[in-house]
Image (tube, rainbow, N blue to C red; front, side, top):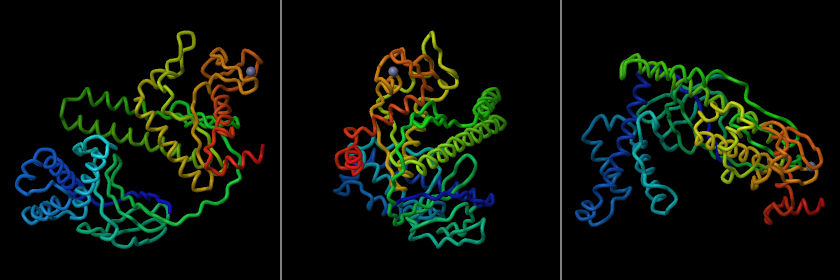
Length: 397
Ligand SMILES: [Zn+2]
């Protein structure tokens, strides 16, 4: 079984959008109040009820609250129950040591609500461009049908992003990965928007002025009168531009990972946890890195998240097509000569060029790293014993 999410932009009138926002607010409130109850009142509750606060007890209270307050009752109960279930799961994860203590949800950060598929109508495709779906209490929601949906819908989420409202269907469908005998490849991930392949190809994201524009609008916002309408407007503008830049980066990652998945079988990447990712930005005194300010400006955690996402996209796409992703220890991949095996920091002549001091082998620095990564990942000893890939390699040797 394969899981996929299908996301479409909703085009609704102002009234509908403000109702979505109210639903998000109520769901967030239910979650936060329930969290507060669990954090602060569990002792009292246990004394009076004789048992701990659980999902069923909170769901019962929700029903009582809905009977009392119209503004809670006007929003779909399924979404509110989902919030309580999410909280229950968050606590289970916390008690099992898988996650930290649940945090309150925040406005403009957690603007979403989720409804189980059993309460959602069938998706009606209206024409080549539009489709609609009926949601409880909300009615028909029309969305831009940009790609066909596949499989059985698990649940439906309505979410606000900087450019508007979206509906996300999570689906499950049967899929048998085909046999894949495409060649293997190594990938070196650079600074957020460039990737080198061991075949010598380089992918880099086309330059854009969005990051500069975003900074301009942030500056404008900080100059305007605090908490004024005009400041809010500038902030909104900045957020919209940042979201556009993020969408563009995601799109680029989708394009690159799809191309790689279509052409190659095994894909080898470095295991990013080990690598100190901030080191390459400023370079050394003799050899300063390029775009230092730009790279430093990019929050390190955003960088890590971006590369983690690349890995996630590549894994599911490659596996879907019968390939796989192998991760290796990245130590020495940037300074090793693939021709003679010399490991020397001096081999890395500068950020862009690799020149072996022992044998004179020359290459683009990132491509050279990708070649090393490829070699490390396809060495028979590096492939886990259980996978068929290892047997295959042994047969080939
Ligand atoms: Zn060499």
